[in-house]
Amino acid sequence: MSRLVIEGGKALCGSISVHGAKNAVLPILAATVLCSDGVNVIHNCPNLKDVTVTIEILRKLGARVTRQGHTITVDARHRLRHHIPASLMQQLRSSIIFMGAIAARTHKAKISMPGGCELGPRPIDLHSNALESLGCKIKEKNGYLHVNAKRLKSTTLPLSFPSVGATENILLASCLIPGVTVIENAAKEPEIIDLVAFLNAMGASITGAGTSRIIITGVPRLHAADYSIMPDRIAAMTYLCCAAATGGSITLTNVVPEHLETGLSILAQCGCFIEATSSTVTLVAPPKLQAPDTITTAPYPGFPTDAQSLFVALLACAEGTSHVHETIFESRFKSAEVLNTMGASISVQDNHAEIHGVSTLHGRTVSAPDLRGGAALVIAALAADGISEINNVQYIDRGYDSLVTNLRHLGANIERK
Ligand code: EPZ
View 1 (cartoon, rainbow, N blue to C red):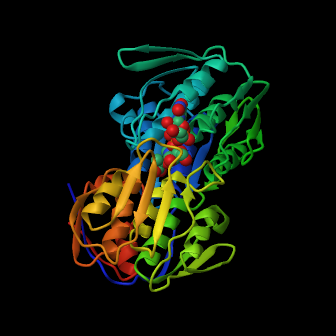
View 2 (view 1 turned 180 degrees about the vertical axis):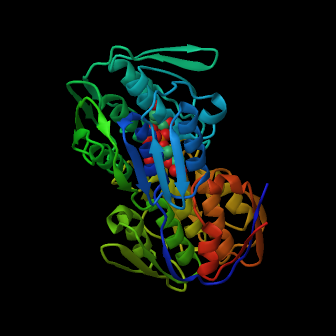
């Protein structure tokens, strides 16, 4: 297993372009299963492990997929299979989104439970309840979910929680169902807007994306589209935190500043100078960050849970005491205890982290607990004095394209070994 070796203490400075969004490209690739007419061309796809696994799933289903750089083409015109092996399903969380897509295309599906970062229990009851309301019959047998989707019907689906994945599954399951399906309390994340924009580019008829009420009017079939994935807002926040934590300055190109609003507001409270144009953000860090107001994670447009561990690492050396409250996942502070081995002073109780700023962190050999927890350790290692080694890099590789190249470009002493 590879590891990252980082010598901290250098201010990161420079400009980088942010890669396409992992949490947009994954459901959009799943959506190509619905297209029986033409070849979809999708640009700005990040080179990530989760994308590679999703391409393997598409090929397993019988689609023809090519990848040239950041462009992926998917030809799903021919008859598709309906079974995804557990060995692929269990490698990522977003494999569950194929349930709705395969059910809509082939009228049946055989899948196992998905994988994904261990952030606490990650049930799929909202997904299966919604698909059953759309007429699916779902039976669990020998660790697989067997879905019978011969009689799908449009309906209104009130979600008890604005689940990103469940909203995506409903969108994929319903866009070919005659009639009008309504999602109430839908997720409003930018990745949902991107998925709906792609579905509509393929000829779907969906309105309300980005609001809590999405209306899907079924169409008989979808045609191919030529589409470009939105920038990754969490990768963008990661690079901003790397520069802020090292007292550096950075310009990000190919970003959507409004997607970063809550993170930028916290960074400004910490004393960073922030300037944004329509597609760039520039940050100049102060010599010493100040503790901001309490950070509380929430569904979009609230502070994103995926940026929570990034900011816990950032605030480890901020002046004063910072507070971070996690409201989405039950176990998303794993990196805090690792940061404490690097000299941080963070106490976690009932999903609330209290961070007493220390003067500096010290390089250590540590292991990434999950994707964003691993990114948090990179931020800490870049700010720490001395050398850190970060194991379990495979977690980080699931969500960051060219992380080492980008950080070296910004002046970091970092190597993959
Ligand atoms: C998506 O996960 C993202 N993953 C996550 O990003 C992100 O943290 C999360 O949305 C919240 O924004 C992808 O898009 C691939 P949810 P998802 O359904 O869809 C509970 C990353 O780092 N829930 O909105 O799984 C669930 O347990 C990843 O890129 C149910 O109870 O998130 C959690 O507490 C990590 N039953 C909450 O809802 C269900 O059926 C939010 O889950 C589904 C979810």
